[in-house]
Each structure stands twice: as C-alpha cells, then as structure tokens.
Amino acid sequence: MCTFVSWKEYEGHGYFLTDADLRTKAGEKLLRPEVRDDLCGHGAIESFWPELKGKGINKECSDFSSPKNFPKEIAKALKTSKMFRLGIPNGLLTATAFAKIFAVKKNRVAAWR
View 1 (cartoon, rainbow, N blue to C red):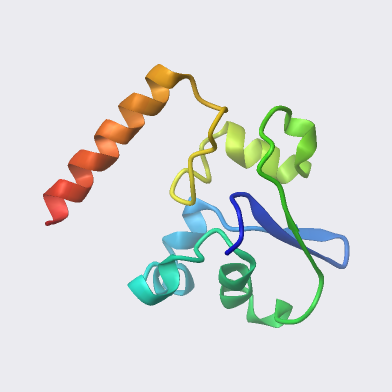
View 2: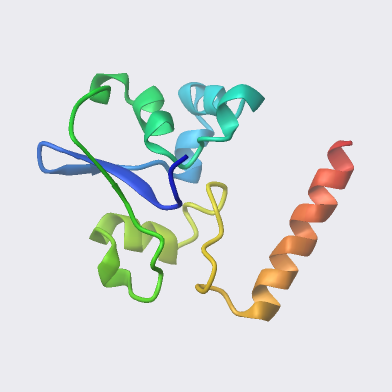
C-alpha cells in the first residue's frame, strides 16, 4: 500500500489525484470499497489515467516538514486543501485542528450508518 502523498512522474509531468478528480465518473469508481484502500496510491492513479499503467516513475513522500519535499503542484494542492479526501497528513495540522477534523469525519461516518 502506498503512502499519502503518492504521484507518478511521466514525460516531465507529475500525476496525482485531487478531490476534484474523485468527483468525476472515473474518480467515483475509485471510491468503491474494493478499490478505496489504495485511494492515495499509484494503483489509483493508474486507474484514473489508464495510459500511465506500467509507465513513469512511482514517487511518494510522507515528510510534510517542508513544501519543498513535494513537486510544486502537489504542495499547492495540499496548501489549498485540494487533497483533503485522500488523506490528512500527520504533523501538518495542529492537534486542535486535527481533533476538529476527526470529530467531523466521525459524525459523517455515523450519519451514513
């Protein structure tokens, strides 16, 4: 299983998923229970962009201590909350902010049961 954040580099471009991608038909398929476990991984990226299957370089980074650890596009997406549905990076949020987000997620899950 890949870590949050994962991306593929191919022909000078970085491919990664955002919340907007998950709102498309191709993205909705990634939210099915049998696929969801790898939502932030390279398999999901290849499912969204099938032309990348077996191509490019798989990259990932879970060190959120500096935006410089990520390609500029991913750092911008993280800063503007465009990857929130894919994961919440530990260490990027304060403990108070993380607790608030966890409470909201817990209430949403309870509402779906």
